[in-house]
Structures are given as C-alpha cells and as structure tokens.
Amino acid sequence: MNILFEDNHIIAINKNNSDLVQVDKTKDLSLEDKVKSYIKTKYNKPGEAFIGVVHRIDRPVSGVVLFARTSKALSRLNQMFQEKEIKKTYWAIIKNKPATERGTLIHYIYRDSKKNKSFAHDTKINDSKKAILHYKIIATSEMYYLLEIDLETGRHHQIRCQLSKMGCPIRGDLKYGYPRSNDRGGINLHSRNISFIHPVKEEKVDITAPLPDEKIWTIFKLPN
Image 1: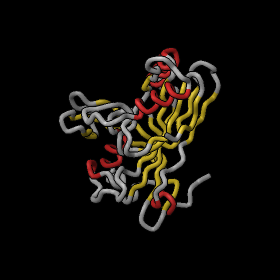
Image 2: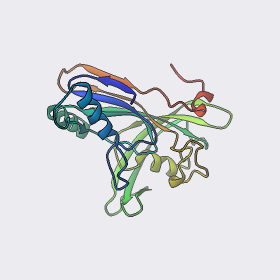
Image 3: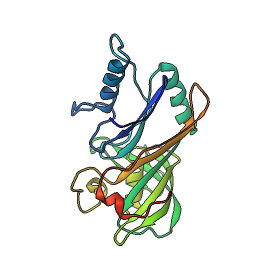
Image 4: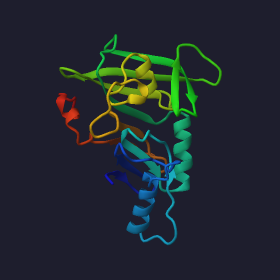
C-alpha cells in the first residue's frame, strides 16, 4: 500500500485502479481489509483493528481514499461529508474537447442497481438525485485533454456519468461510452486531492495522491 497520511485518528491510501475499497460480491480482498491488516500488524493489536470506511471511489478509479481509525473520527468525518466540509478534487483524461474551457454540470442522476450504472438527465425524474460538479481544462496534448474536477455532490458514478452525458467519456471507460479499454485496465480518473479540517485535532489536512505509474499521465505538461 502507498500510505499518504497516517496518525492516530485517520489514514489515507493512494488506491490502485484495481483495488476494491470495500468488499463486494466478488469477495476480492478489499483495501479496507488490507488497511486493517496493516494496522493490526504495525501496532500489534489484539483482535481485529478498527477501520471505518469514510467514502468510496469506484474500483477502476485510482487515487486518495480516506479511512477513519477511530469511531469518533468516523462519526465526525461522516458528518463533514454530509455538510460538504470536505473538498475532493479529481483529474480525468478525455479525448473529446468540452464545449467550454471550464464549466458547471448539473444533472439529475438515476442509478440502475441491476446494471450497476447511472444515467444523467437534464430534468428530475423519479428516484433521481441532483448532481453538481465543476470542471476546467488544466492541460492538453495532441490527442487528449486533462480535466480538473471539483465535486459538489457525491453520487454513484457521478463524474463518469456526467462527463459521458457531456459527450466527453473518460479514457478507458467502456461502461460510459469510451470506445476502447486501457492496456493496463482501469480508467483514467484519479482522485487527486482531498482537503478538510482534522476531525479531532482541528488542523487543516491537505492530501495529494501522486499520479499512477502509467505513460499516459506523462504526456501532459502538468500544473505545479
């Protein structure tokens, strides 16, 4: 595991795009289980170590994932997410240029649980939830555009779904309309940064996840 931040209350991991955050029907070893094992071994804890899942990112997505190490931290972080006090920023590689260099996408997302897929609508439909994100182009190459995305809401497959609705599916994302998969699997969506006030120490925490070791990310002249 690539540990980005750790103290007595929280731990942040730079997730690979093949890792599950939490166990699902595949029964594959999850990142949650790996972190529990790491904490148990490092601190020689009897029994199972406590790890609270604060938020999830999709399996084919890479980047920073935050876990709570205490129930107190978990409760406070959950509340902070609900009250939108935690800022999450993503980077995404797309092939089609957006109509504008920067913009805000507002849709109503309906989740089809049977298909494990979300659908974005311009107007509200039954069982849909409002979804808002802000994007801007931060780098370009001969073939691709790099977007920086700030989430205002956290819906199922929100970024993937909304960018696809805009006509800009994420590179490698077959589920949402990109024509080809990536050679190394996953999609080129990266949870780049998370920032918040520490749930116990009340200090500013700002965590940035290094980009995956894939050639595609090196074609851009990246911002500092």
